[in-house]
Structures are given as C-alpha cells and as structure tokens.
Length: 84
Image (cartoon, rainbow, N blue to C red; front, side, top):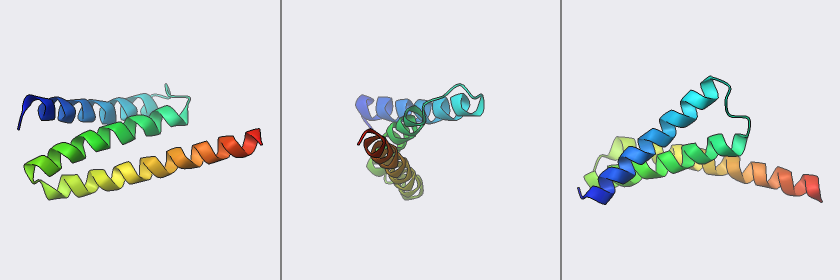
C-alpha cells in the first residue's frame, strides 16, 4: 500500500477514536460533529480495507459509514423542517 493509503487509514482510525472519546466524555455537543467524524473515519478505513482486500473490516465500515450518513441526513432534514 502506498503512503497516501496508509495516511488515509491512520486518519480514519484517529477520527473514529476521537469521536468515541469525545462522545464518551460528553465533550461533543453537536451531533453532526460526532456523526461526521464517524463518517470520515469509516470511509478512510473502508478504503484501506478495500485496497488490501480485507473484506470483513471493509463491510463493517461501509455499514458504519451508511449509518453515519443516514444520521447526518436526518439532522439536515430536521434542521430544514425547523426553519420552514
């Protein structure tokens, strides 16, 4: 794997861990930030897993990213309804 892939994977892992720690400690007050970090992390790890042919973590992180995307969509929809 090339350097860009390695950086993508490490940044993805860091984003997931950061989201977990900040949420566990009650630091994150904005749900979009939590789900955004989860989305970014899952995409990074899924991309590296795909490149390496590691299917179980790739599938897990595609599902993880899908959940985070759905939550971000719901947050945006709620915000649009509230402003209408």
